[in-house]
Amino acid sequence: MKLAALLTLALLTVAPASEPLRVYHIGNSLTRNLPLDRLKALFADAGIAYDYGQQLGPGFRLEMHLINAAPGTPIAKIGRYNLVEPYSQYSDAFKKFTFDAVVLQPFQMPLDLEAKTAKAPFFTLGDLQAASVLIDYARGRTKPGQGRWDLEHPNTDHVACERFFIYATWPGAENVLAHQPPTFASYYAQPYRNENGKMSCADFYHQLVNRLNERHAGLPQPVRLIPAGEVMAKLDALIREGKLPGIGAFYARNQPYFVKARRNNPKKSPFDSDAFDPQAGVLNFYADGIHLNDQPHNGEDSGAIGSYVAALTVFTTLSGKSPVGLTAAPYEQFDAKQDAELIQALQQAVWSVVAGHPLSGVPVSAK
Image 1 (tube, helix red, strand yellow):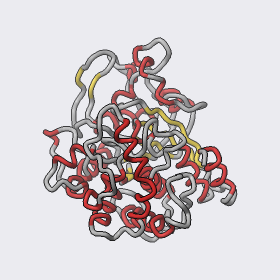
Image 2 (tube, one colour):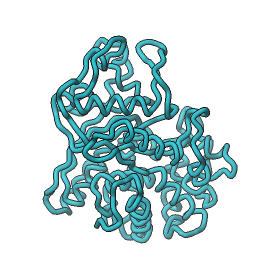
Image 3 (tube, one colour):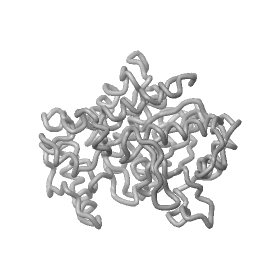
């Protein structure tokens, strides 16, 4: 079924939206991997109108977003960041609009690194520093300065948002397979070592959120964590233990999608199994070395299982509501009848991680 039809079906089966939510996303293809149009349909299924802006650059780290993307500038050659009107790029959005939440997606940078110059027009910042700059910009608290576009074009007075989330994603398959033992859950549970720089693990994101809250103690509510990687770690263990019902039958139908996606990628995926491999856990979710659906990640066949899990995690953390009972219709790999038990198990896994998580802000008592 085509994407437009899927989204229409999802929207027709829900009550009118009563709780509008406007969110701005800054990240790269791992955010685009959700995809946001399908995430919007999940919110609609819960009666929430999800209005979003986005600035998503290919392979972009947070500090790379601080460069202006106006036509004629060097950064524009990379491709306008997949911007959404009327919000456009972050500098316009944070000066002209207000948002209920801003979601920041770190990517492959050390936790703590002061500014260093790089090949023009780029510079490098640790994720702590880059996220902090973006938070200040959204709050209208940029201190004007020289040498960086965001400082030379500051937001000093317009409060666009006071509610911020860190979208905690997942490591590349290559990193998982090089770890001992070579399991996602084991890799994700290891302590972060700043000297090693680029480590996507739970401890990295926990430290990042805690240190952002130290820097921005005056926020009306603390910076929160969207623990997508931790959800995947839980599912990794469930799959390897044979405790995720229906997953084998799901892959019996959908394995050709993943085989094709991994082998069509210019750089062959380090995990490339012809059949579902229970001992590989959530590596089965990978459509290449790091993405959960095939490129371009928001096409008509982007409704993959990993994207659904990630979207459920975003929904649950932002809304504070349980995902149990939500539709899977926007994610076409699922069959509502054949996969009913699997869909419910995925939703329950998401809820078990997010509800009561010390950094998610979602209490166990939420419904």
